[in-house]
Length: 512
Image 1 (tube, rainbow, N blue to C red):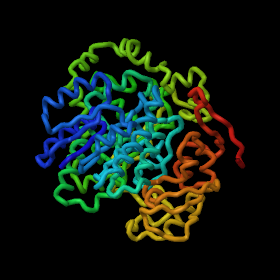
Image 2 (cartoon, rainbow, N blue to C red):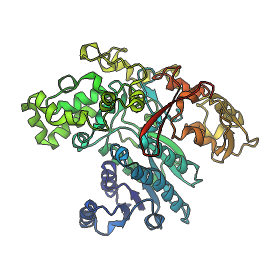
Image 3 (cartoon, rainbow, N blue to C red):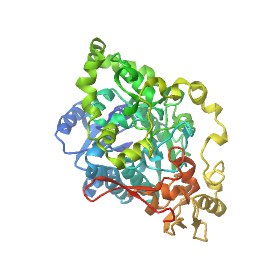
Image 4 (cartoon, rainbow, N blue to C red):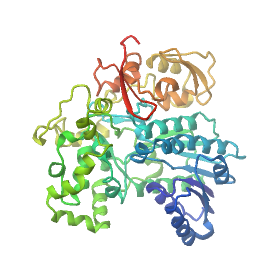
């Protein structure tokens, strides 16, 4: 078995590489590493550890020559490379080059191979956008509503769509959920990003270790011919019940290892109230039933992080006010902090993150929290077995039908629920492109699989910029059913970046 990987230097990538190379069936893994100096040391370490079972290609993923060198002659390509927040916020060009252009370049290189290797594309749950207590659970096929100003998710959306529409012989798209790893604390105390977190956001945390084990199991089982039904589908990488938290829980558990708590270190009005991403998965069992990879619990893993970093325990000896002054104050007023946008008068970002009428409790006793039972029994809310059909979003067609049984009536029903229609008259099958028309009259080609099972729609309307969902929701019930969970129906705003990269907001006419 010969495997190519991108993103092997990342948190998921390191685990995937290490665990994949535990398989005797693997002849070699060829990895793409950028020319950054830190990868010089990593290259030497990998060669020392794995010898001729590791092959290294140096350069960027946006260069076709690098991608050709990476994928030529392999059996599988695993694409994990990503520029994630806050790096994607600080360097949007790097985000676009890796998350979108890089994904396109890699897929094109695969198409040039004969025979084509099997392709595993790691996408992200950030595509689903903001969720709250009204729709805590989601699944593959839900609308993809990238949160305004989220460049990472915007570029990943485009990269995923390109992979789905490329006509590859054999592919699988895995949407990664929130991922916790041993450097979690250190990586998230350098930027104001933590204040984007909505306290009541449903988050399903998987560990980097379990993510790597999933990848190992895919290669292991496919080599034995045990998973023929796995390919040409989209899955959510999930953690199950033991990984389900909220934004509040995450701060409670994470800062608990230094003797803190949300109430001790923060004020509730520091955090955004919408425009985040996160959900619990109603279909998280699908991958686990195939690969049995969900082993770690999030609470136990936080304890492991504390043991890995003994220095964190010293935080218990430091007064909370000193920790705030020495650490959190600079983050609170960082230019990527939602609270800083609020106090500095950045109207576009503030409205996106807090809504038109800002009314946030300033005292913790006045905050309603999912994890404290203010919206129902917390254990019951997280119990996927208690979900009713009405708890899930409508996909506009009978989504209990198998893909093989879809027909033109399913496509027409789905299109109508999105405010559009099918233009094509011939049904070419779920993986062959047909012509659709959106509510704005744009005609576009896409496979029924990309639309019905992927949740994608018109590339001109739904691949921001601009973020135009206030207007679209008035014509598109598919989007409206979740957009109005956190937006008022009288909001008529369009979000975008100007030519200098500044966030802007425009009031639009209702009939526009």
